[in-house]
Image 1 (spheres, rainbow, N blue to C red):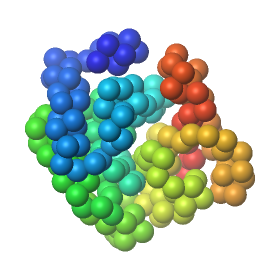
Image 2 (tube, helix red, strand yellow):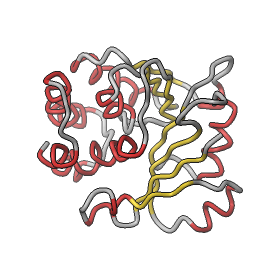
Image 3 (spheres, one colour):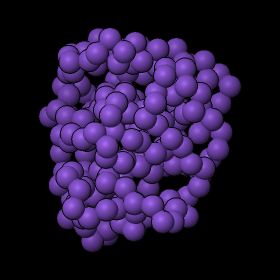
Amino acid sequence: MEIIQKYFTEFTETQLQQLTHLKDLYAEWNEKINVISRKDIDNFYEHHVLHSLAIATQFEFMPGMEIMDLGCGGGFPGIPLAIFFPNTQFHLVDSINKKLKVVNEVATAIGLQNLSTQHCRAEDIKNRKFDVVVSRAVAPLKDLWTWSKPLLKKGAKPSGLICLKGGDLANEIFESGCKPRVWEIEKIFDSPFFTDKYLLQVAI
């Protein structure tokens, strides 16, 4: 938790309690369902929570906005963002139901009221639009944009697809045909873990 509080200081008591409980909950669930790398549990707050909250350093999600986490896995970045923005609605989507079970159980355990889940693929969602789609290391940018674009409202601020990615992205960005804004996360958080990790936004 210390590394979270190094960069974020204005948490309410409720948010602090929610964040503090996350590691034990994920460690417990990881024994039953492997939702995150076992070697990452020791660095849980840096590798999962802080990484997710990189989005919150550059974007403010306003009360009433609807955010979809595409391919949420065990709940990242959706759960940390839902804690950080308690008045914003988060809808976490994944094609693997057992991972959503963990998301739902963790959300219930910490009392998250602004989070819902759906077991499906993004392309199967019909008749619903979101202000923003967020994602972490799910698929190439070309695919993420193809899946996200039909689900996005126009005119939202911030808008579009906001994703966390790593590695050499030059070819991936070229193949996507997108012109994303790109932030180097190592310039946001001073830690070797974030070398070659990036935050991207494709606005609509």
